[in-house]
Length: 481
Ligand code: SAM
Ligand code: SF4
Image (cartoon, rainbow, N blue to C red; front, side):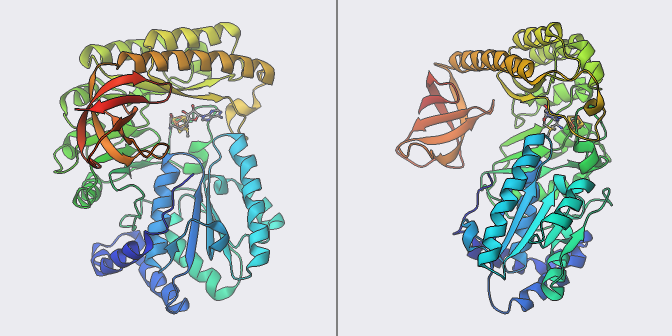
């Protein structure tokens, strides 16, 4: 769940207001919203209403929520971490898997009770799920206590939509079918002062046959390199040390430059010590990109490269555009050029038509690559995607049984990878005190592993040398040198 800091508001409210003139001068689609921000402030007359945002889903949704928070702070609202005390509640939704959709209706139910206690409460739903017509119809007809509904493409219009609701007392529904360009200069309320997500592309053109993302996030568009650089320079000035460039298919970035060129262009920003990116598609992993990872010192020697399946015939049915063999060749090249690179992945089990032999190919590929970590998913039918109408759906019990076998392998190799770090000295970017044990500090290695260690001094925000003394299943433990 998204982190919300209740002590943050005062600093955050003042800052965007100071920048307002500057933003007007910069232009961009958010410019038209500034007047609505001012209108909302005057409607609230000296009050600082509280808002609560719940983010479901991936890093892209988290980045979107940081923009929603930024805009709300611009409108004089303050972030609040107790939902029951909030004046405005937004749920930013996900629909990648069916259970996310089912869960949302549970979350919405919570709003009914809150609304009955507080008649002035305003409720909003946004994000991927709202791009689906059947969902919006259901909300319109059956959930009358939802006041505002908007999608992924018109997120930047929140000030206008909120203003409409505050002035008309009518429910507001606005969904756009596709991107109409990228809105720049949207204020962002960063949740992490050391590490920041920076979206560089929106949407996806790949249409993997199981995936709903291209339908709800629209066609792929790349931000201008200059705007990306400007954002990162600002972040560096604010003290951010690590950035993660985000895109559904981040390495198909294409503006006046391609992705490896963009990485070089961003690599000399003073203060940014680490650059990460996700998610890469194997079909766009070029030799030029591998060389960029090898040659740019601030680029972490880690790649998240979703395999999805190790069977070439399943990969064809998934429309992934690579084979088991071509994937393994890429891995060989990566390891040849960057010997200590860490590699993580996404795997789906139980895609329609997947046989036991296909599944064994996945286990075999997983073992051959020796992944450091994986996000594992049971195939979930998404209405509107080609795979959902395939006749040969895999029965649930077989999916679960395969999933358990996969998890066993993933855990074994992750532990092996963690064990291999014992006695090594790793560079760790310190994020702060551990949340589970206040005697420890926590940070991440270049390979993106969580490293916990004891220290007498607070090194938050700096990169320190930590000697790894013990491997655990989900983190490694060390001592600062
Ligand atoms: N664009 C990224 C990519 O291609 O890897 C991430 C997109 S998606 C939000 C993250 C992961 O969800 C995918 O890599 C895939 O493994 C999984 N996923 C997507 N659709 C799915 C489905 N219908 N059932 C199960 N897992 C799914
Ligand atoms: Fe979905 Fe495939 Fe696009 Fe990733 S690359 S978002 S899995 S369609």
